[in-house]
Amino acid sequence: MGHVAFGLFFATVAWFVWDDRASVAFIGLAAVASLLPDVDLWLSKLFPAEVHHHGVTHTVLFVTVMSLAAAALLTALFSDRIDDWIGSERFDRSSLFVFLSGGFLVGGLSHLVADMLSAPDISTPIEPFWPFFDKLWSVDLVWYNAMWINFGFLSAMIVVHLALAYLTTPPDHRYRLLPV
Image 1: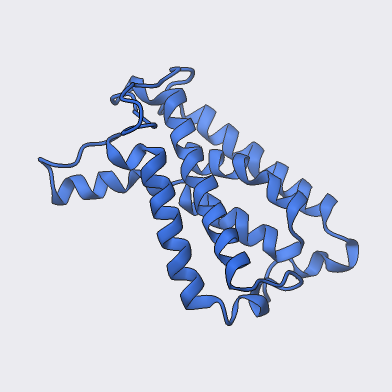
Image 2: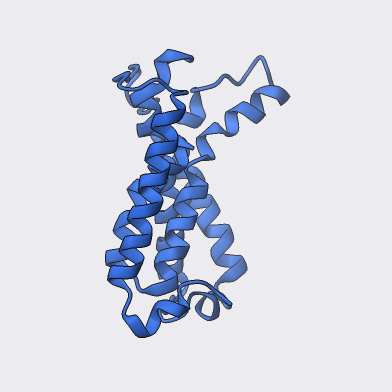
């Protein structure tokens, strides 16, 4: 819950950059991508000796490379149909690539920030700037599994996004926010 809440927090800017469904798409992408660095939890089951939690997948380098790779793949797959799905925004291949890589990057980086604020309670601190700087980073502001903080922050972010959707979308376009 906490990582998705941070992804939503970092993605609030979308309401001021794009219109209608494009904002919803970016926010959804960032929320899903906020879970990307924890792929190491699955990889450690396959490669227990080589992969550990808060390792290479919790770096700016990994998040950036994966964001660019995922954006390239999705651009190749969906560039011909995206305008029909998103609505009023029009994306050529390069702007779609930037849009997608930005969504993945925002979500992935939000995860790193969340872990820097909470990770030392139950796991090792992260080295987000590895291999450029070999230094652990953490603030240890909140307990990682504090249900009331995670649930409260996620609830607050959902309310913020609903309010921003209402306030930034023209009245005659509000029905178009979600595909029907």
